[in-house]
Image (tube, rainbow, N blue to C red):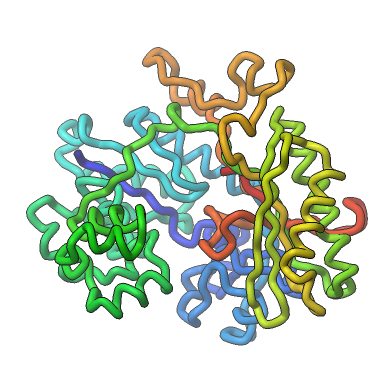
Length: 421
């Protein structure tokens, strides 16, 4: 296989610099409001030179670069640009897996011969992107025999580059790649592996699979495959995407509400927004997950399964309060809170007959027929939407939450983070 990993560089920030010429060449951060402890959704190339990274709090970014420019996120603008570059990719092949709003995998196995090989094809895609999207919006393309190696190639070619890891180069790449460079191996796992004398993927390959399974459970089997440069995840074209498994919202707690009582108001608002989206999508769920962060940036989270599925905000809120109480209650100075519905099993999810997703197939990725044009196909691809300033799935420590505000929808600034997974 020849897999392309196409990753837009500093996407949200680059889009803003393209749209606003006065931002070009300056350190720019796309985030929520900097005065409510929001997080960095994207940093421009100039901001990254100061050490600013996605996921960092806005006050941390300000400390690293006092003259950084904060820009509120514009989800509609980013999704519009994403649809535009995906339409370009669809003109080459329907074999596209949408990984996030700014990342796409493309299976080029059957088409590279038409363009003289992987590198010429990658350069042509980049040229078309630049012409269609603007010179400030660039992408990096990694090419490899599977998604794991293609993504590693991207990381080594960033920013605005192209790299192809050929099959014969894989052993050398495994020797040179630290385990922390692999998407899916976080600092904690990397630290545990270092205690075992494992620093690179080649080191990981030397550890017997049964031992990794004993130490890490089922995850150990995945680690074993990664160590050999293999990717256990199949390529999933957009028209084979599964239904959503979770819907949630989270939000930085506004300064006036940074107390246990205030955080409860924020949690109520999150419960209402989550319930509304459940009903809008025709879902009912039986698992409620709550997470919050205190003044020391410590995360707390837990979930509870309900006896019967629901989409009622009152029941979700009361369950969320019970979960919070089980965690010892909100801290004296809560900074962030999140509420999410999770699907624990197929029995926990229901669709209503009137749901748009069962009405003519809307809400699903439609199968490529071969007769549709790229534009027609684009209209059938409802991108997973992050109606805020998030470009991808939340960090591992946020697993199971998302962002939104407090007392009433009219009075709270809509700087929420939400997602569908």
